[in-house]
Image (cartoon, rainbow, N blue to C red; front, top):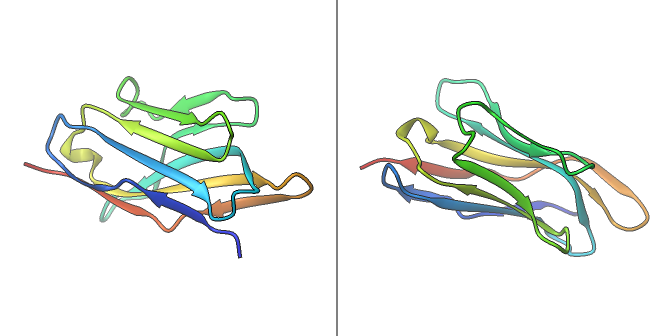
Length: 120
């Protein structure tokens, strides 16, 4: 069963950086579009960054200028570079993607989530 696998979460001090990565568990799949979401305790899940099938990117206002979403040239992994992190960025981050195997699509795939904690 194909899964989205995330990595890169952890604990970082305010002002620090982290890079999250998300890729399909089977490397025959390319990433057509992807979004990163986050959910903090007691809060609703929110979209942080995304790109669509045309390569257009969008960011939540709260992370503009600090976070960057990017897909590698092979289109098999997506990273979320997070700079100038703030305590309010603390949340569980999850990736959501549409995948293409070369012959069929898998839509609305979710990763397992990775914890990001920003604290001194």
